[in-house]
Length: 224
Image (tube, rainbow, N blue to C red):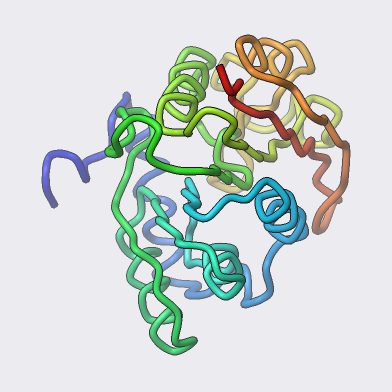
């Protein structure tokens, strides 16, 4: 493992890295082969905006990255789990689509040039075990790598979720259940992350068991 592949941050970040590596190893393809509803929405938004180059953050084993690639986008997928990215590579080869990939801990600067992508997608990546300061720094990095007028679609679990305020508390609205640590977003945090952007939509939805309660946020880097 290279320096850039080692998890940044403290003990919680390292524990989460180990937990996700183990989870993907024990449960390959754990989210199935169908793209998320958020990815289907994002593909339509990106296509309408004329996007060609898509960056996915926290791609996991690739169900959404493969959906974008099959839709004709040039896709660069990142995750901090090499195990997940190996599974993504196998799935891409089997599907006959091209997806470039790289190990990326989003606590570090994104390894891409300025204004190098047309769109960025992140399904429940921002609500991992990231501090508010780390989330703000990541959104600034997303803005940097997006071209002017580029679109950012992300989803996060929010403070209306049934798991918010329960489980193991780590501070900064981060709570852990079953080994998975989640930063639950307040609406104030979402609004803070739109500063300097053109906000398009904040859409509430539910997903999976419990059910998880999320926001899907669409915002655009200003053209000027």
